[in-house]
Length: 347
Image (tube, rainbow, N blue to C red):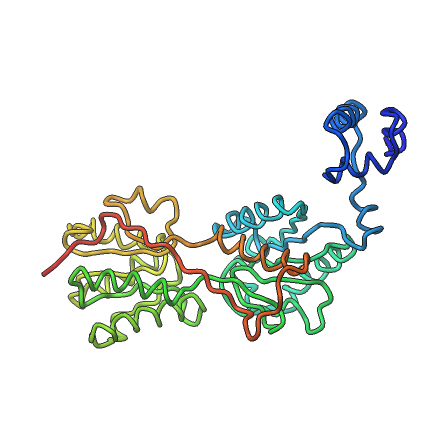
């Protein structure tokens, strides 16, 4: 392995000069810097970041713990984190727990199985001497993964940490659902059905509260009969939409775009037109939403922004740039409204 001393000897400068150049310190001439960088490239020198970290008590490495990298929400969150890390000169180690791949959604309340995967991963990251950890949840809930007194700076992304000392960054589900339901109401719809996610799910609860607030502000009486719990999949949504259509609704708010696919299918089979006979709104803005016919009006999840904010919170703390904000440990990021052709105006 090529060393700094060998590079210095080749360039006829001191090892300190080589170190200053590699660390971007502007204390050498451009001619010297250029000559050193050409030599570094020619000799194939690679810094030993781990050894540097031991000397500085910092490794400039962040551990990312993803519940499952295959969850559709996770890659963009990771991209947002990586974007910020690269700009600040930090590297990231990504650990994929593969919880959904291992157990589908059957692991949610099985603490022993969950910790049998999580705990060794956390210990491994600590052995790497990472400066901080960001945990990326697969769905919104309160998660007990950082015990009291956890010694490494950490942030929770896309969910909420049970430990109140850990900052959490998540979707503002309530505000975002409120905005899209207010849009439906602005188009003249007053009898709005809901195809909801699983009952008890945090996303479901918050989006339902946003729906209720929009109705209340518009003096529309909330009717629980118009809320059908479908479990996030197309087939369940298809079946529940049959019950909703018995209620003489004019619009359907689907808490996920893929559930809107089930509603589209049912309406087509019944000879009803989306955006003309029945308005349909979704949530997520998955890629397929713009290819529905007509295109689906929906809310785009702020996934990259959640990643960026999570990284900013952690990196600012590591760099000493962020003072503790009194009482502030939950950061909610609103979705972006996407208007397409699936909602019509009625008088």
